[in-house]
Length: 460
Image 1 (spheres, helix red, strand yellow):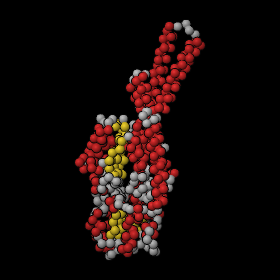
Image 2 (cartoon, rainbow, N blue to C red):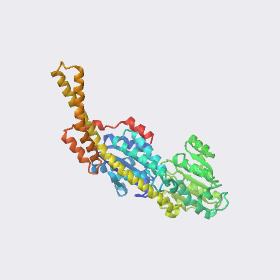
Image 3 (cartoon, rainbow, N blue to C red):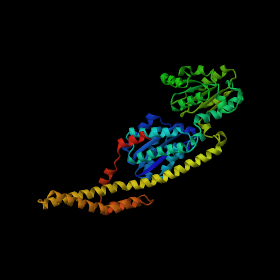
Image 4 (cartoon, rainbow, N blue to C red):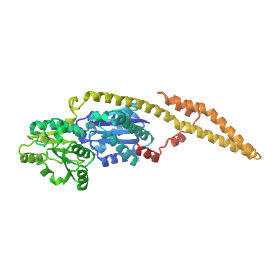
């Protein structure tokens, strides 16, 4: 069995395609529920964020795994396989491990270094565990990935170098809207932080991205208004940022007074239609309005970008951000290089550990077989020498077990060392064939421990 990664992201597909394959949590759960009936995929984890959908699988064969995984993505997103194929990327074996480690470290994000992906991957792994879709292979992989992500953010300055989508969105729209005649209460300045200070912002949604937006705006001195379908969640977020909440039915009216709108809901359709924004523009009497849409599928009708006085950015525009849009690009290069070095080392260490771990069940099965042989021979001796006293019988048993342990010690230690090498798989096969070990006994040893795996994830 080998690890396969297949998916689409902002790097391989336009926003329109990403919208068509967006999966919410129930959708991911339904996909994972199909894994037990798969002939090719033994385990799976699905990462579904605003700019990527990836399926990691432990597969029986390469081509069969690709076909099965592609079919599952097509089935559960409703996107025809013909639409998906041109945008899908595939990684296998060590390359799949390397890709996951790059993703969890923030190196593959739209905004390099963003830390949210670490939590999103942790949540994806926990959901797969809850659904019973993971086993030993992916549990070890994702536990290692979470540790790599934590190392990247703890040991380098990648957090400071990279910005969240929220701050990138603000950096894109606010300087432009300031040129239109920014009406907020700040005195001078052109950076997004200076422009946010004293402004009024409407945050639509109350999920993790919306919470990050509200917290960021509040910390930079903005007055925050939160609109959400679930009033209680909106009110909790508003209280946390010393703002106020409004029901979704009052969003149109709220547009009259705010300087900035940042929307990120989990809605399936548009929550801020063109006509609603157009009506607000007419009531604002020329006051410009900045709108940032971080949702996927999109919350805001992209046509609002054509309205006079509206400066608009969505994920499609943010994906084209140049180095000029990212502060301290040069200093960030050093942090990126440091994270890449961590990833390279961790990929090599994981590959070595994985090869060594593959031989461990065979070694355990060999020792178990040896114990069975010793027990059988001691039982046979007891039948042939019934008058042997207990002291002598115990000494004979200890001697026999010491002899067997010494005979097995060197070859089992050596085979573990050899198995850690790039061509180490052949040594496990040789050990199994030489001692005629039952494949079923090896598989029994290799079965995952769901409780232990869950405990390790909680501590990650």
